[in-house]
Length: 166
Image 1 (cartoon, rainbow, N blue to C red):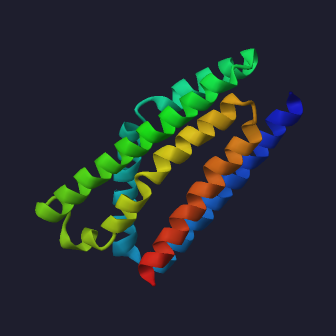
Image 2 (image 1 turned 30 degrees about the vertical axis):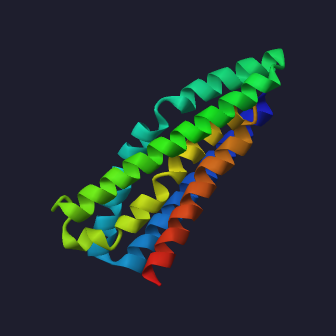
């Protein structure tokens, strides 16, 4: 038990360091004005991710651990499929809605529109990743969930921004 806790603590500290490093790289890569735009859009992405998860992250963590305890694998697989498809559908629906509002109205100023593809591209992926992390936690692999949650999200963000800048 103590070993698991120490692994999770180590990964949390490494994740915080990676987040700091990515934020510094973004600030240097984008400049002051564009970094502010990206920070605003990432905040919007965080709120949209909460909506797109639709509570499946908490449900999956609870039910996957329950199904694992009683070894009910068909129900676990069914839950995973329903959760992933529902969260992906909500993520796409919210991305389409934000994309429509961003292009057809003055919701996003002109400076924000060049980074809107980043928001729309990440929106279906981040809720799926959050639900997958909850499933891994439900299976009892806390350290693996921690790695996925911190490293994957930061690397995905950095890769998307580098692609946009290039």
